[in-house]
Structures are given as structure tokens and as C-alpha cells.
Amino acid sequence: MGTDTVRAQAGDDAAERRREQHGWYFYDWACSVYSTSVLTVFIGPYLTSVARAAADPDGFVHPLGIPVRAGSFFAYCVSASVVLAIVVMPMAGAAADRTGRRKPLLAAAAYTGAAATTGLFFLDGHRYLLGGALLIVANASVAVSMVLYNSYLPQIAPPEERDAVSSRGWAFGYAAGSLVLVANLVLFTGHDSFGVSEATAVRICLASAGLWWGVFTLVPLRRLRDRRAPAAAAPRARGWRQLAATVRDLRGRPLTLAFLVAYLIYNDGIQTVISQASVYGSQELGLGQSTLITAVLMVQVLAVAGALGMGRLARTYGAKRTILGSLVAWTATLAAGFFLPAGAPVWFFVLAAGIGLVLGGSQALSRSLFSHLVPPGKEAEYFSAYEMSDRGMSWLGPLLFGMTYQLTGSYRDAIVSLVVFFVLGFGLLARVPVERAIRDAGNPVPDRI
Image 1 (cartoon, rainbow, N blue to C red):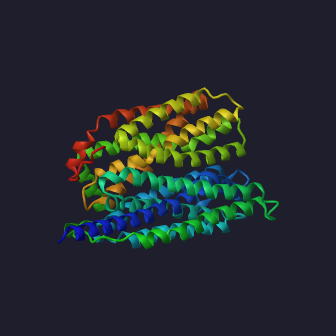
Image 2: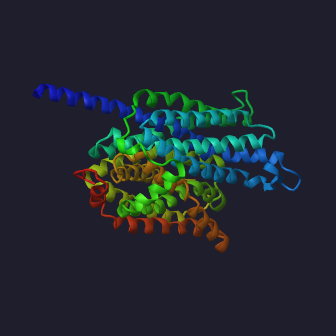
Image 3: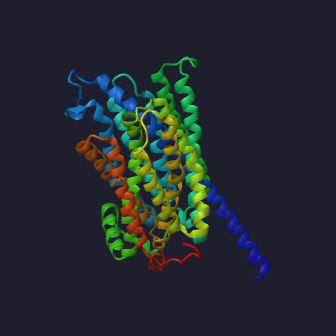
């Protein structure tokens, strides 16, 4: 084969890889709107209000005949969705690796979630059971779809490109979340001028996230392609037997497991800060709902710049050092949060800016670094363990936050208690020799990692 032919083939391969990468980014663009508008902003307060409207005089609803306080119904639904996701994720991951057909599985998970989210438009009156069921399905579906989505990363990006590709994906997601949240807030705050009630405006916001998710999922489904599964993947076990096999395999790769444990700990801290920051702002600092929603929007916008900026830093300093730097920044942000004065939204916005700048990058680079530690042919299987460590263990941080508040009566003590996750995560990650871990996984070591 001549030199010109080789160069032409290499150019064609690079163009096809870029096409797939651009399609891959759009799944973050499609599904991140659910996490931002639905889960973070609207569904919790609205579903709780519907449950309270359906409650008995003592404030209880009775799903399946079980007495549940209306104010706890949303939290229980989120917990149930995590359980469902943990059941389904290993099955989806094993099927993807065994057959090589990720795209049909991604489509099934995405459109199940999008349909459930769109169906939240019908959540009104006393229909709290409908809302709870749709929330459980949507939240589990987005978790399963992310396993399949993340497992494409080692296939569409060579080692030297993964930090940048992963960071762009997160940036796309935060950009979409910001764009749709702005539109939602315009409708929500000006619902009278649009001729709709506040409840109807919320239902439109919820349904619009599902429609957005479904429409933009078409882009990755058109551009991503399936690869034939390795012959060795054919006889793999299914479902939970596959999960048990994955755990055994991880025990045989202690360095990959060590990274996963470090990620589990510091990511639990990240997720807890995200979920509890609004409680801290409203209960400890006395800030209003409009201030809190504006802060959420600021986090989304700055997370775009943060993800791209930290991706650039990783090219110079390596992903591991950049993640370690972000954990130092998280610790400093929480320490500053302890001293925020009450009734001063400007300083809360400064805190939100700090969170936004490190949020996207720390998550994006963790994903790309883990992709180097995955044995070839086991991408979906290992990313199901990665996603399960993310979602399945995300109760430890809220538990510590709640217990600290219960013992001290101070949300300031509760928020600063989360520093332990970042300090411990930093120590564990710093001890992982990532170059040796990459070689042990059977992958080439990038020039900068």
C-alpha cells in the first residue's frame, strides 16, 4: 500500500472518529437537561406539593398501602430509582459488551426516560403515584443510558484525546442545561403574562425536558456506530452473574479498583454539595428561591468554562494532577462556605462560581481517566461499576450532612463536614500509580496522564 493511500486512510479514519465524537457530545446535550431542570430544580418541590394535596389529615400518603409522610415521598422515589438502576445497569452493561450492540440499548434507555419525563406533564391534582412512578423510571433510565454512553469513550477517542473529548461532552451538557433552564425560568417567573398558572408552567418545564432529551438523542444514534464484540465476549454471564464476575475481575486489578474507591469517595462529596447547597442557602443563609435558582444557573454556565479549562490543564499537567488540584479547590470552597454571612446573596454567588468552575472538570477528567483503566472489550461492564459507584453509594454524604446537623443544629457544621470526602479522596487518588494501572489493564500509556 502506497504512502498516499495510507495517509488517505488515516485521514478518513480521523474524519470518522471526529464525526462519532461530535455525535457523542450530543447525548450529554440531550440528557443533561433532565438532571438540571427536572431533578435539580422543579420536580422535588412540585411532586411534594402534589403529594401534600393528596395527603390525609395527618399529612400521610399511602402508596401500596404504606403510610409515608408527603414531605418524604420525593426522597423515597429517588432512592427507589437508584435501586432499580442498580438492578438494570449490570444487565445492560453485560449485554452491550457481549453483543457489541450498544446503540439499540442506548436508544431503549434514552427513549424510556424521555417518555417518562414528558409524561410528567400529566402530574397534577392528586396524582402523586403517577409522578412517583414516572420519576423512578426516568431517573433509572438516565443512569442506565449513561453506562452505555460512557462506554463509547474508549472506542471513539484514542488515549491522547480522551481528556479533551470527555471535557467537551460535559461542557455540552452544562451548556444545554443552562440554555433550557433560562427558557424555563422565563416561563416560570412570567407565567401570568403567558396566560398559564404556576403549576401549568412547571408541568410544561418538566415535559419540555423530556422532549428535548428525545429529539437530540437522534444525533448520537445517527452518528455513533456499533463495533463487533470480541470473540471472547460471547460466553459471558448475564445480569447479576456478570456483575459478580466484574467484581472478581476488579479484585484482580487492584489499581483500577483503588481508583474506583477514591472516585466513589470524592464524588460522593461532590454530589452531596450539589444536592444540599440549596438547603444551606435557604435554611442557614436565609436566601430566597429566585436567588437559589439564579445560583444554579450560574453553576451551569461556569461549569462549561470549567470543564473546558480543566481539559486544557490536563493536557499540560495530566488528568490525575488536575483532578487532585480540583479536590483542593473543592476543599477551599467548602471552607469558605462555612464563613458566608447570612442574607448576603453576593457571597453565595461567589461560592456558586467556585463550585461551577471545578464541577464539570473534576467529573469529566475522572471519566476519561477511568477509561484508561478499563480492559479492552469490557467497557460497558466496567462503566456499569463506575456508574453504580456514583449512584449506588451517593447516600453516604447526605447521611453525614444530616447526622452532623442533627448533632450540632448547624448547617454550617454540616456543610464543612463534607471536607472529609475530598481530603480522603485526595489521599487515596494520590496513592494510585495510574501509569502502572493503565499498563495492567492492557492499554497504552498516554504521553501525559
